[in-house]
Image (cartoon, rainbow, N blue to C red):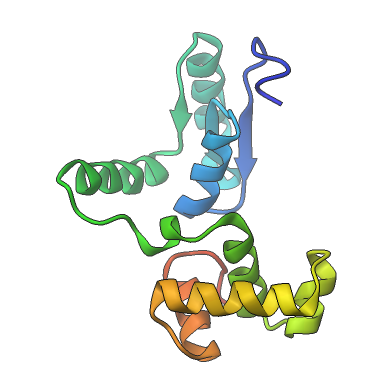
Length: 148
């Protein structure tokens, strides 16, 4: 969308407070990422910053992204999620949400064999070899939220 409408500035208003969602939004061309619980004062500030040509991130998200940037600038290895392809991240999320391989294949319009291949590759890249470990990992990195 950002490529088609370069003059349009988009602020994402989300309930998801994890880095993966923020990074996906920024990669897609969003100029801001605001959490729904931010309140009207923060929304007003985000609108002003983005309208002036800047980028606005919810303060809680900025801290994590800056820490990640500093880590990368220091030459440390990328976060494991960054080593996954987009389909592998989708498969990981669906596994963590409790879906079977057949359900995952249906949701992503893949063959069961392709879904299994993505699962095998993400397990290798993350060096996690069971579903319980994948679920714990997805929770730890904020890909899914624990049930309240």
